[in-house]
Amino acid sequence: MEEIKVSPDYNWFRSTVPLKRIIVDDDDSKVWSLYDAGPKSIRCPIIFLPPVSGTAEVFFQQVLALTGWGYRVISLQYPVYWDLLEFCDGFRKLLDHLQLDKVHLFGASLGGFLAQKFAECTYKSPRVHSLVLCNSFSDTSIFNQTWAANSFWLMPAFMLKKIVLGNFSKGPVDPKMADAIDFMVDRLESLNQSDLASRLTLNCQNSYVEPHKIKDVVVTIIDVFDQSALSLEAKEEMYKLYPNARRAHLKTGGNFPYLCRSAEVNLYIQIHLRQFHGTRYAAINPAMVSAEELEVQKSHLTEDRDVEDSQ
Image (cartoon, rainbow, N blue to C red):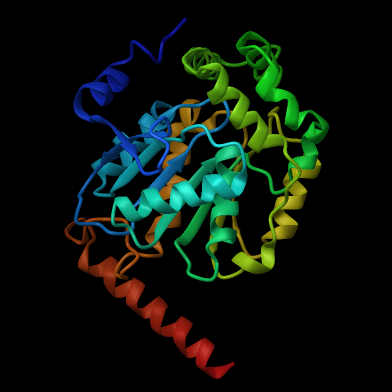
């Protein structure tokens, strides 16, 4: 039990990457918590958005691996927001505060939905350059709980935790997946009633992504073939919504592949970010990119421009 919490990697992460707390709203109770690691000179980092049960710590393996490769990574935890527009406005203010013009977003489950809604919300003045969507969805109606969205704020914390735990994997799982579930249960315990109620409200209030508004955003979809909280229909809907997206499939990984299949997930993120090397939207320190790779990237960019010009 609690293998991840006592692991050397997690303890190294907690001891070397400071947790920052930032307030950007007029309401002082709305505090963004985040880990910001890697070269601060990078103006287009990758930002990680957690699921309903997650905190900023759940992406510690991505923070350690990607910063080791030279990327700037921000993993955050959102304050209490009760509707999507309010969240988008708060997130935009956070990016302004951090002096980030455009960013890459990795979102898991609810985090992926919020990432898509933020990209949609800011499409007239784009703030999102690319998306990596892990076990995510595009329409809240898949949970069949839109009727309950307005009553979560009334429920006690134990009841809300029970609702969230109902989506965790049941039955036999491999040891790494069991450790990931234990860690997420521990993270869930650290969230208070308003944190959980607001996240479940965002997760279930009637809303869907409008794909025509984010058609220019580069997308990679990461999902698993084994049991997860997402139905096959929800996954198919994502593929239809983003027909040009890169698809990264994991044979197993359950709801939390970024914890129990971190090496594979990190590789997929690296492949996604590599296409921006050598551009102003690179999330990596240029010194960490070889001259040969930059040449290849430049030739790809030239070919893409030639194709666009010929159309």
